[in-house]
Amino acid sequence: MKFRVGAIPDSQEFTANNWKPLKEPGPIVMQCFALPLGILFCALMIWLWVRWTPVTENPVTYPLLLAIVMLSVFPVHELLHLVMHPKFGMSDKSFLGVWPSRMILYAYYTDILSRNRFLAIFGMPIMILSVLPLLICSMIGYASVTIAFMSCFNMLAAGGDIFAILILLFQVPNGAIVRNQGWRTYWN
Image 1 (cartoon, rainbow, N blue to C red):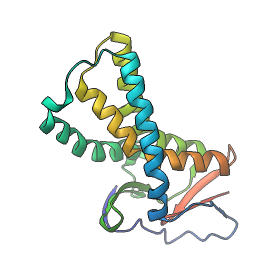
Image 2 (image 1 turned 90 degrees about the horizontal axis):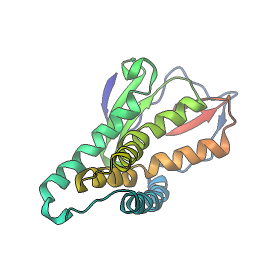
Image 3 (image 1 turned 90 degrees about the vertical axis):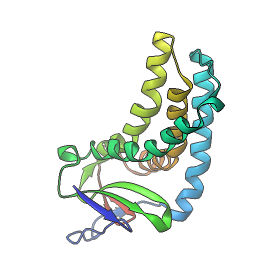
């Protein structure tokens, strides 16, 4: 795994000859799609938490704790993407980075993956940080505002992942292989 500050890296050995590019926007326009998706799915998570669990604490009594949760969600979210890479993200083809000018943290893999592996990479933080806590708390009849907040805030932050999942599901057939070249995604 390599750490990177700046734009998502290009793979030097990749040429797009025989690969089909996805129809996807650049990073700034993608954020314009991701934010409404994140808000919509965050609202859905809030509704599910209210319906399925007995969250009764007042969130304004924990402002420092909630701020810590907000700051912690981003790196944990990206690490969950990373562990879904081959070799649990410990490959020299895995990157963990921050792109300050685009306000993006990212986990990135520079080689070929199956479409379903890509879907799993995008979906893992949603499942572990948002859905699983809700399911566990609803099954045991317990919830705290901190857990619910983490779950909902992660879903808000996952708007880009949700957008990427939709693009993959609608543009890439099952069984295809996928790879990135910088910001662009290609399939074959």
